[in-house]
Amino acid sequence: MTEPLDDAADVLRDALAESADPVRVTLTIPRVIAEKLLLLVEAEHTSGAVVVPVKELYTTTESAAMLGISRASLMKLIESGDIEAVKVGTHHRVPADELVAYQRARQVSRERAAELLTEFSSRSTGFQSNVTFRAAARRLQHALGEGRES
Image (cartoon, rainbow, N blue to C red; front, side, top):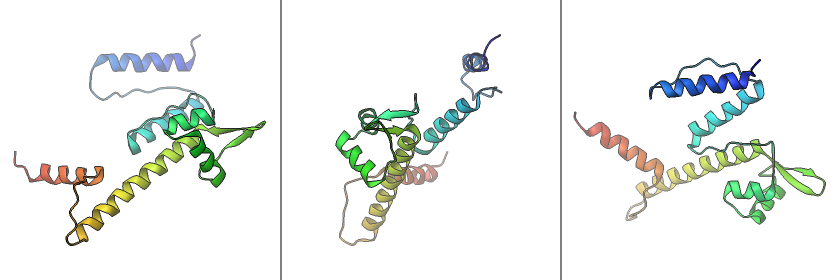
């Protein structure tokens, strides 16, 4: 008898091979896999960046590398409570969901800062910026796209 996960992988493989159109499938998968799949879809939707946790706990070195920061910076975040970690013996381990949550929060913070700076520069007289932020660029692209006639 095949495992539900093997069957699900086969169903997805077949559906993806059929065409480039959106894929519609019905899968039976273990709950833990469904939870991981949901995290993956949410991460892709919110930030476009995807972290696929392969295990539940990561070392501080692995965590720092995934976040693109130094291990010392990660330890400061752990000590301040910005990132939760557990102690295994004398070493810290960072849960995968904490890494995802921190990345999401950091992305939201960056986007908000860009919006505030854009708003400030538009209200300031005599201020001229040569920097375009992602959120502002999207709005500009959207406005230019609507202004075109087909």
